[in-house]
Length: 475
Ligand code: BES
Ligand code: ZN
Ligand code: ZN
Image (cartoon, rainbow, N blue to C red; front, side):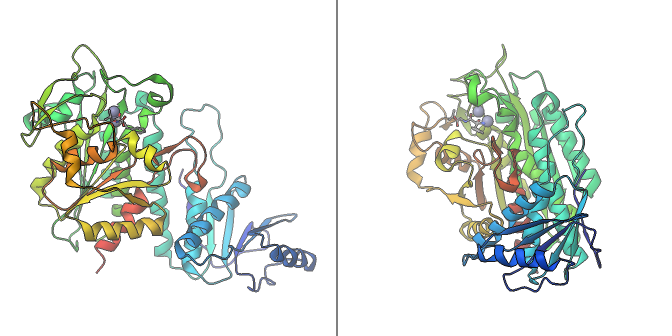
């Protein structure tokens, strides 16, 4: 069940209350006793950010964000305060947020942090009660439309988390395609799923090679959102890596600490499905297409092998030197398939390399781009606003020498250094349009709680893409 966020005109003194305010805001009219107001006064002097009063019939939180001149940091701190308050109020059914400082941006950030953290993946636990906190009421000067937009974004992030948290035992490539179809059906998107036969007829050699060792069929899903009043005539395409499980294939991964979380390797696909839901449920005037190549990667008697040479959808040949570098192979086919739409911009998202995760950890997204300087700048800005930040890698031509093959056009393995970049350079051989590559291997899944992103799948990428697409297509 999704968290409901609702506007409320009035509230009584028996409801759980969260008051967002500044140090000097007037809060005498919220039914607090004079002893409590004195207590609050004292706590304010200590710069306490969350002042908690446990009354007989309600919980009251006074939230005063600490001073911070950097706007991005300030907003992110407020989201984190939302998470902290949620932690203490999560056993209540509902609460009301009031905006005593009249700052809509901060109200949204706080509510966003609270609602984003109101998530648990409990599907496979028997006998566990559902989340208790169901409704967040907002008593403030804000339109219903804005509240609904926020609620839709949060539902989309939670959908992405659900998909990424779902283990391979319950999410094959066909299941992933079915989920995309369902999202499409619920939100008026046109969704098409190619089966193996169709993928073979399209000669998607990368996707087919990775799928060779699997007992399940690959899928290739197209989600299209093309409203009549779309601002952009040429589509923006988002592509997500859909490896539903990555064993490494014949270049098998060691079990400990690497294979155990490889259900997350469809994280990019999860973001594409979540983003398509976010833009369609919010009716964005944007022409956007989502592409999802999907399969698992595993060894078998028929699996593709190191040393193989394969021919890709765009006819280029690739020497496979490591079957664990499979993501770039399925993405490459999707990137060249994207060409037929004559796109304005293509963004791919992938849990592509351990190197990206090692470079910056789970704190941000590794990015590269070609022919898309302006778009990348805009995306970076949105990354700062949403705190789904981009860390740009160098993308010099020189890196290409690391993926030169003796017997094919290129190889799928780079050298000992710059693994995230050589993966990006590999992909660049398959593009013909402005392109941004986002390696989300680090932040897609966290083993310990990371603020409102929680523990497990974070859903990072959805808020970034939603707000970027909204901005790019604003009138
Ligand atoms: N799916 C992995 C990358 C990954 C690592 C995702 C950690 C999420 C968390 C990818 O397919 C992979 O195995 N990459 C190899 C590439 C190497 C063989 C060139 C890697 O990064 O080690
Ligand atoms: Zn791999
Ligand atoms: Zn992978």
